[in-house]
Image (tube, rainbow, N blue to C red):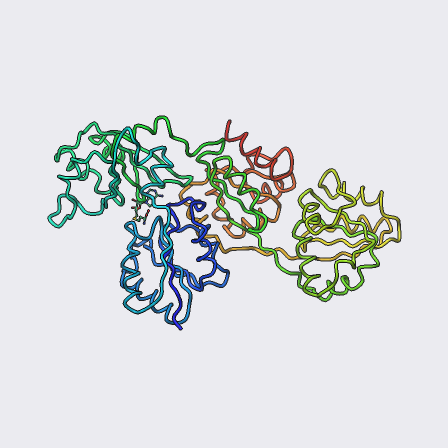
Length: 504
Ligand code: SAH
């Protein structure tokens, strides 16, 4: 049975401009066929086992021809797969979505169109330019700038365009801007008409060049504007002086690398975005099940004997209860045990399960935890310590030394995650990163092992910021020049530090 093809627009760049329907269709597809400029964040809504087919331009500029893309869509659908054809902006606004739908129609394959937020309207909006305004114009014209107006075969009627008082929005016109603007002026459009070129609109890299029709091509060339960019010509451009609103905030325009695992990155990513920055997720760590599941099971089957159960991280809590659930061991097995959590987030994670923590140390150091536990645990009592494979053994050793009967349980393993390497390497190569954040020693060591020691010199343009002194020490040992360490060793403390050094 052939399945459906969803032809989906995902907006111009900011992934939060995706529609709910786009997210839903991408999440259910077996195959994602996507173009250039579709960011990793958008693809992260796909199922983990979805097949990803890239059909955009490669660095050597060879794109899959349109017939090739049509054929892929047909073939995948006929083989019984649900296909998400993912495009920038809106699929029917210079998106060739119509051609793709036609080819599906010809083969009798069912399809749905999921409209997207088009760059022709949203990119000016992010630059503070409303494409229509009652005081300035009464129409909006979206035009391809791909055709050279001086070519015979140009289908665009510049004579008439120049006469319109509506706003003109040119897509795909960076290269042709000099001919477009001079042709418009020759056809009678005022050289003084306000104009703007907006590059990579709605993203953290948005740049806006403003001028008038007669100088906008030169100004854009001087600024080195590259595709993707759109050009707006019309009096509405002058409103930008009052309405420019993006990017705003203390981290506006700053690109911040987040090296935490994908599961743990969300709070840091959210805070960076809230403050106007662009968070680049580069998870260096993946959390996996421990290798010794038999030990785990033995522990879970004897939970009743522990007076205290200590969790040193959110991951520890997550894995512990996930495995408990898998092994069908009832949470009431913990009845009678006191709970210790290291860090507010760990306490919250337990709280989400309806468990109230009996002790959380004020400071998140092994020393403090050991001291606190020893004040509470009597010699001979059994304590279960659920920790990461790479956690230091000081805590269990200290407890043992004091005569406590410690069960040292490896609740999860951390492994190096190399999945997102390419995007970050490209940014590193081009020195386009402002900050790199490290939230634990393992994010540092994994980062170095993924990027390669030989490439660390490329970090010089970016500032490295660590969550605490232990992480900073590891970074320094790897030869990373640490710019700053958070005063309070939490995610919020780290964000405060980013803000304060941005303001310097
Ligand atoms: N279907 C898309 C347009 C595809 S044509 C839409 O509805 O937006 C590609 C052109 O769109 C680019 O050459 C550029 O002119 C424009 N464009 C797309 N994303 C953009 C962005 N983030 N900033 C500026 N222009 C963008």
